[in-house]
Image 1 (tube, rainbow, N blue to C red):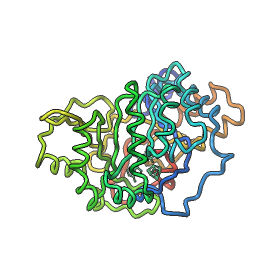
Image 2: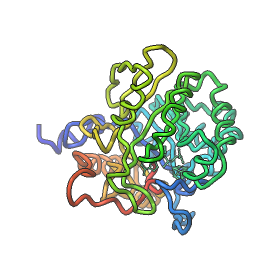
Image 3: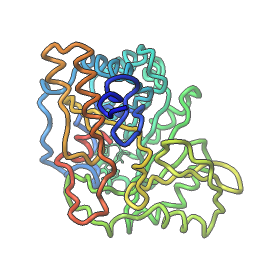
Amino acid sequence: MKPRDQEATGPLRDAHGRAITDLRVSVTDRCNFRCKYCMPAEGMPWLDRADVLSFEEIERLVRVLGGLGVTDVRLTGGEPLARREFPRLVAMLRGIETIRDLSLTTNGYLLERDAAALVDAGIDRVNVSIDSLARDRFHEVTRRDALPQVLRGLEAIAAHERVRPIKVNAVAMRDFTEDEVFRFCELARSSDYQVRFIEFMPLDGDRSWSADQVLTGAEIRELIETRHELVATPREPHATARVYRFAQGGGEIGFINPVSEPFCADCNRIRMTADGKLRTCLFSIRETDLREPLRAGATDAELDRVIRDAVWRKELKHRVNEPGFVAPPRTMSAIGG
Ligand code: SAM
Ligand code: SF4
């Protein structure tokens, strides 16, 4: 079979044989935090509102992608809950029969307000980003004194037993996160949240990333193992995290190691930005505009072709660890992490 024939029908697949079933949708590039590893303190240029996809446009594109084999959709940003009436979008996407798993990544600041509405709208799973469990250090990283409010948000969503698993994500930074590791272990052991450490990636708004600031998952695991025995759990297909349980019982801890142990080989993921650009890798330099054909009245079949073509050219792997690596023009909050 010629590669082009393979591309024309059936589930979405790239030229390296990977099936694409997972979509991250950024619903806004704006945010109520200014995390150091993500956004500059000020001066971040925002998208014009007219360029941001409406809920109806997002729904149409997700429906088309659902028809091509996407089953899992995660809503992100910027801060998704900062977008007005966000739960309404969740309800709209819940109505797409092909989407089996609908999840959200949030900084948690507005979660206490929105938890019940999100559950009513049909959200399946929620990840809350918390980089420090000490109020002053949380303030230092996010540039907002908001830890108590975020923890209330976490509790508010966790009160809904239907929403599981709940994951707490912390970006790991050298000379910062080491002091937090055991506090996060206690959180994991005293709750049913899966706590995960994410390696710092070169997608920060300040463009000040350097490899020596990356505290690797292996280093954190070694530190944890000075006090707790960890047992690896079986790796699920396409999982980005390596997950361990505490041998003494209680809780799970995960490591997302895109820098030190890239997981590109079985990547099943694509992304859509708030302004309707399809990105086939977090680190893509090239994007495919879906908004323009959508607003020009493209049929589903025409959108199918544009999407299949873009996915076919999905990057084999990221090149963060290679000499000459070029960071994408968009930074994390504008891509949708
Ligand atoms: N505002 C929401 C939040 O913070 O959860 C959703 C968007 S945020 C861009 C998604 C995730 O990306 C968060 O867990 C955040 O910590 C992570 N992130 C942002 N910049 C990062 C970077 N440079 N390296 C690694 N993770 C990063
Ligand atoms: Fe906002 Fe999330 Fe970026 Fe922090 S990581 S600045 S909360 S988008």
